[in-house]
Image 1: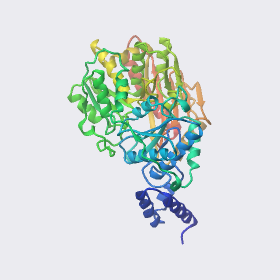
Image 2: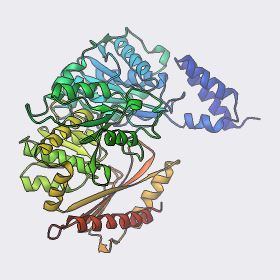
Image 3: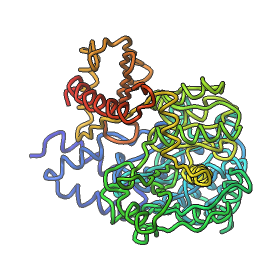
Image 4: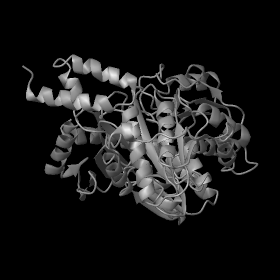
Length: 549
């Protein structure tokens, strides 16, 4: 006899199946239901709860059921979003972009039909394009909001749904930026209020923008650079099987650079990401093909975008081979470059990024702001924002154009810097050395723990709160800052060390961000770097013990 749990699970699955608009998803659920109780664990996971519409929108595995990305969930999300926009009095079109992941175009087209069915004008991107182009379009077309269907650098089995607000509802600092509270909670409530999906009216497909729409983005991206500056640089590039290649190549050509050499087997969009274990340039091995190409071409610079091209990774040649720059290193190089160019406004980063940007801004007399993690907060640090970055390879070098991280304008800007330094017989590494000599070596690292059970993250955070360290690297902990209940973030500081611990907002990971500052005595950078690296390794072990991981 079936248990009460199995009966309830079957009833919920049957009810969902009856309202699911996608024949393929209905068939997928039908097979799982018919195989109960053998499939009970799988069904329980799919019906554990709906994907929550948070400040990163939706993100999850492609599968049938409420706890997955599928046509039913997207229909419900789109209906809730357009209802919320109407309730806020928002006027103007909804613009929709999509990447090359499985289901992305279908989800975008469904969103457009839900919008028009509710009486809202819908503008659809003409083809797969980078996330920064969508963020740009929200501002350029004075849209009430934008939707980008992407899971960024998540595994191939995932997809997602990000929402941007125009100036009407986002305010000047949030024009074209990702949503923040309370908008996320309001949209989530509107989604939950959607009734039967069969009753959601579907309208016309919307207006597909002209195929050359992205040329406006390319023109403005190239215009971010100083006109007539040095452009003599050999560049190797990969879009990592994503959608950034065509747009980046066009922007580099328009800016006056020679065409980058592109990793051939990663050049075309491919939702399976076949040559990498994980399509994130931060992950070990993800840039191997790029670095091989850079070495073969004797390149000056190697650049990678993540699959939706909102992140930018850079590697530089050294005497011992190619070295990827950390996000904090590239962030301070870009900030330093923009300050030297005379770009005015506030320079911002997050509480988990290196403290070096703050010291640089203080020394240069430049306004500085520090925010919670996420670009939705960085771009709202100040209305007159000059630059923002996060250590996870996200950079906003042109906030008046794109109020979000943008891997293409970041790539252009670092290429401009490298070309300028090249004319002086210097490199990006040389400039990092100069900054380290001035401010000390700010060495950063990350302890990242991927979990199968999200409860493990809560347990580890609980251990750190209940038994915080009294010393780190032999020095007394001078500050323990806990941001609960507003944010699940814990910070420990000593006079030369900082540790910030938090759960990831987009992946099943617990992250500890480590920083050690080592002074440079009598110009001896080598000793300072060796000291800092050893200290980071020790600190990593100490924090792992605190977390019990």
